[in-house]
Amino acid sequence: MRAHEAGALHAEAGHRGPSWLREPDDVNALFPGLWADGVARDDDGVLRVGGVSVKELATEFGTPLYVVDEDDFRARARAFRSAFGDADVYYAGKAFLSVATARWVAEEGLNLDVCSGGELAVALRAGFPAERIGLHGNNKSVAELVRALDAGVGRIIVDSFEEIDRLATLAAARDVRASVLVRTKVGVEAHTHEYIATAHEDQKFGFSIASGEAAEAVRAVLKSPSLRLLGLHSHIGSQIYDTAGFEVAARRVLGLQAAVRDEHRVELPELDLGGGFGIAYTSQDDPQTPAVLAAGLAEIIAHECAGYGLAVPRLSVEPGRSIAGPSTFTLYEVGTVKSVPLDGGASRRYVAVDGGMSDNIRTALYDADYSCTLASRASSATPVLSRVVGKHCESGDIVVKDEFLPDDVAAGDLVAVPGTGAYCRSMASNYNHQPRAAVVAVSAGDARLIMRRETEDDLLALDVG
Image (cartoon, rainbow, N blue to C red; front, side):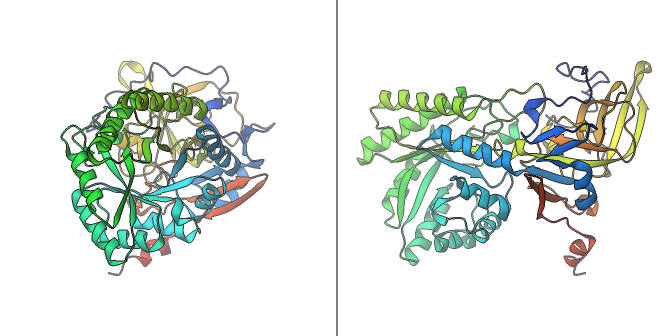
C-alpha cells in the first residue's frame, strides 16, 4: 500500500468511488455505527453532541476541533470492563491520552498502557494509580525505565535482551523487584495494514517464539533476582474485527508457557493477548461488541490451556482504539469547494477544510477510510460524491477519500468526520506550521476544554534561532 506519486490514492479511487459506498437516500442521515451515542441532529439539521450544537462549539472553541462525547467514552470503557470480568483491561494511551481521559479511565476501573516517558508523565500528572500502569516500548531509555521503577509502575513489557539486562541493573540498584512480561512474536499475519500488524517475524517488536528467542528471554528474566516474571505478552496487530487470529496466537504463546513450566517448574500467572480491536470508520465496517470478543477469547484460552494441561492464567487485554476512537469526531469549517474535470467528461468535487493531514495523518499514512457529514445545517440538495481535503501543501492531504455530501456545500459550512478519537490528535503534527487543534469534552449539555489549541506563540516559543 503505497501512495501514487501524483497524490495519495490518485490512481485507485476513480470518480465513482469505492464499490461499497452507496448514494444515500437522505444525505442528512447519520449512519448509527459511526457516531458516539450522544450525537444527533436537531430540528434544523444541526449536529449536536451531548445536547450542545456544533455551531456553538465552533464559535467558542474554533476549528478544527476534536469533540469528545465523554459519556460515550466512559460507557465504552465500562462495557469492556464488564465484558471481560476478572481480566485486566488496559486502555491504550497511545490512541489518545490527556490528563482528563486518564482520569476517566481510572474512574471506570481500567488499567493504562503507556509507551513513552511523555505518556507516563501525563498518567502520573493525572494521579493514575502507578500499579495499574503497564510500560510498553521497543527502545525504552534508561530515563524512562528509571521513572517507571521510581513511580512503582505495575508491569514493564520487556522487548529485547539489552532491555532485560538494563532493567535488571536499574532495579537492583534501587533494591526493588520489577514485574515484567516478555513480549513474544507469534508469527501470526493479522489481516490489517502492514504498518499496524505487529506479530509477524520481520518487525521490531518482541522475541520470536519460533526461533527459540522468546524461551531464552524467559530464561534471562528468571535468572535475575531483581526481576519478577508475571507472564507472556502477545499482540498481533490493530484494527482487528474478530478473534480468529487470536486462536493461533494463543496456541503458540501458551505452548511456550507450557514449555516454561516443564523446563523451570514455573507456571506463569498472567497472559496478555493484546487486542487492537477494530472500530467502524465507514458503513463497510462491522466491529464486534466487547461481550462477543470476551466470550471468543475466553473460549480460545480455555481450550488451549486444557490442551497443554495448564491452569487458565489471569488474562490481560488491550482494546486499543475501540474506546477512544468512536467517542470523538473532528469538526472542520469548509473554505473552498471546486470541481476538477476528469477523463470521460466526469469530474471530482473537492471540499477543502481548515485542517487536514496535520490533525489526521491516517488517510495518507495507512490508506484509511473515513466518513463525514454536513454538520451545520440540513440540506435538500442532491448528494454528490466528494473528496474532503486539507489545506496543506501536499496532494496527498486527504481527510475523507470518498463521501456523498450535498451539492450545495459551501464556504463557511461545518463538516464533521466521525471515528477520530484514536491516533488523530496523538499523531498530530505542526506540518506547514499549523497549530495543533483543541480537544473539547462534552457531557450533559456542558462543553469544556481538555486540551487547548496551540497558538503561533507556542510555535515560535520553540524556535530559539
